[in-house]
Image 1 (cartoon, rainbow, N blue to C red):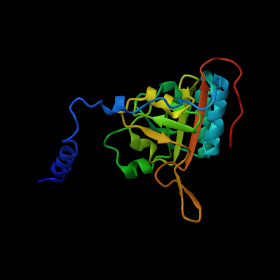
Image 2: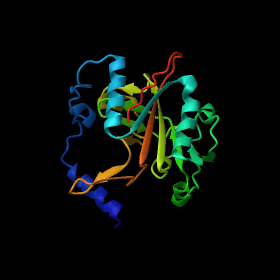
Image 3: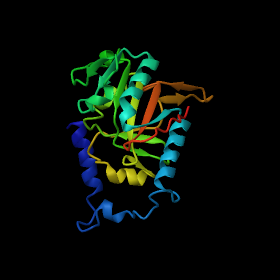
Length: 225
């Protein structure tokens, strides 16, 4: 008997006395908790996202749609990036003007090969203001999970306000639980018992989040360190 068969057998035995007409889990568990804390308008929600991203040591930038390619090019140049991983569905215009070598997201790429790439640029599925979290779901503009876990520098583009929500329950309502979800709150980091922080443990040491307003107009040039 395999380990799989043993585990499934234990599950069957544990469920043997459950009535056939018992309410399914998704109906039996009450979902009446708050979907977000407090009441905020769109501008306040975006401000909270920027504040919490910065609190987690992400570098936050803001621009309008037309300025995005130039900003990404400057961020890559400032980081000294000679190469960047590109998800298959990333809008082509986002990397216009960058001098970095573009590396396609390839299933055959090995971890050592990705480790030699300087940066990765992606979109996101949703961003949660209350927790300062961005969520990736493997969509074409985000690529495979590993391309955001191995390169040392990640630039993530968040469209404002359509990809920003207040709380985690609101984010869950937008996400497909069958997709490979990656929840990111700042650069990869851990600390030991003495609270000595080490960044870059299981992902990028540097996370830069670009909040893009789709409307033309004067850019919000503020950045959060």
